[in-house]
Image (cartoon, rainbow, N blue to C red; front, side, top):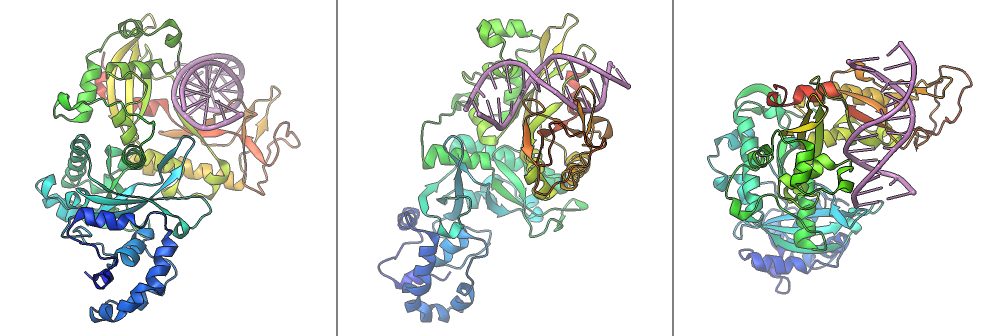
Length: 505
DNA sequence: GCATGATCATGC
DNA sequence: GCATGATCATGC
């Protein structure tokens, strides 16, 4: 490893001592990346160019570029810590066992959240399949001690002009590590099962297998199947990074109420949760309300069924720590007397302007389904119409359904928006018929209005020219806005995804 | 009975 | 005030 700072008394740090590395790192706080870069480029570094040159590292070549490939992470490594960025499997500071990670956070309505997932290390499908335990895995080498460097990303501002706000050593806490080990096993088991091509971020809780490749068409071989798989990396999910930020880096008033307590002992989290819910199986909604002393007023809440699920899990509020950290979304499912689900599953409205500019691989809806794990709480109506608890199920959309039917629906919707082919027809009552993909046209998903009412609209892309089937009948419609719409998963599809034990009476 | 369009209601 | 999750209403 080349380290300019070896020559510099002032900035010397001991690369075998984690605390020393952290202390040195903290001196970046308050400085912009550009300052770090300029300092390295124009100042001290030049005094050591000769020493560096001896090692064969071409400083001029690397630093001639105005920006850094790999972004702020490489910049900090090369310009501040003074070693050449590498993508080796071992830790950045080998002797200290410390991995350096530079990561952005952003402002949200309430406080701050991580801006993105944290990519940890590429998954080598062949090597990973040979690893016998988590403790000797490459992944563990990368995450057992990390130096996290955080900066605030603001829209319209180049990251190189952002300021380093926090620098802190981090080790996943013991409770989290149990879940991370479970996630790791799940990913490795899928690879060993010859299904690396079916990996999805929604499979797991905190640790994800995110796609990583220059092009969406990149593929890798896998050990137990001839099917090529997308290149993937282990990553901490955005939701988990948000937790780290709000719990350890800038702790505030956000409190987390865990489902699993240390005293509950070691167990598979999802099995544990499902068993806890199962204890209340067959109880009616009314019985559950009485059991958990739900007030008359609360019984009218639309989230009553979800609220009861949290009570069954021993949570006082309507948020569970593990669910928040894993970005798990709770959905209640009601099966009718006839064994069918009446309602389709809705998602947030899409923004026409954004949608029309997106590609499937990086789309808001595609990414949401790709990354989200759902927790279904299933109720079933008895002959008198009273709901009884059936149980619960964790679910994420299978790879083939997402990349097949959902993609088809998404792409035709985007194209319709792009080309203004909503094909409006307005009948005598003012009901608007549109041209978006219908439930009857696709096995998995469809598009429907989803707003306050039909006058609740979002802007259309500039220059959109709506084609109208009946000439001149615009009414409330103009060329610049359209009734809010969202993607929905078909009720019949959701039913097909439910565990058989809920369907057999 | 179901598909489609429309709207409600709570919580943040 | 509005996003989000949940549900209604009508016509075929």
